Length: 260
Image (tube, rainbow, N blue to C red; front, side, top):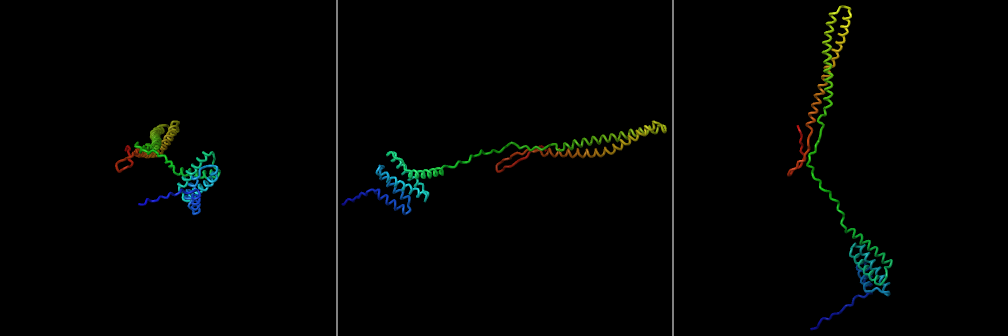
């Protein structure tokens, strides 16, 4: 029985990787081109003889990764570029060499993209939750002036008083007028007593007439105002209510309470 023959395949050379990468790049497959050129960079150790070649290949590899990301927004291209860049910087530090301005520029582009990706992944600040407002079980008092007719009552009382005074004038005028008539009849004609009685009688008649006019007008108006004012006060007392929230299973509303 013949044993199988194993043929060891040599790892691709720097030249092969570079050529394959160029073919991918020319075909528009920038991600694959970046991967092949990254492998080519890793095949060359950092040394004075390889420094220029590695710099050139780093530039084209990073550029390919950036082109690939701009084409499909796949973050893996940027992550691969950052990994390659970190390895390259570490090798330069060991050799005491710094990044060239071209590679530093590509590094800045990669870091900007990573910063934007990180910001987009951060959760948005949730709006501050407001504490739930608890229903107020205390009654809401609705106050209504219980004496809106106070002015009418006072005015009516004043007018009734004036009317009563007019009635007093009427009565006084009639009584004193009758007395003056008696004095007039008892006095001698053309005497001083008769003239005085005549003047007194005229005055008392005027008072009686004035009282007769004032009394009914002011008494009627005063009584009317008093009645209206008292009615308004009574109606206002009925409007003083308390508003209470009522809650029960399957029901929520307002209740009213008051003194009627």
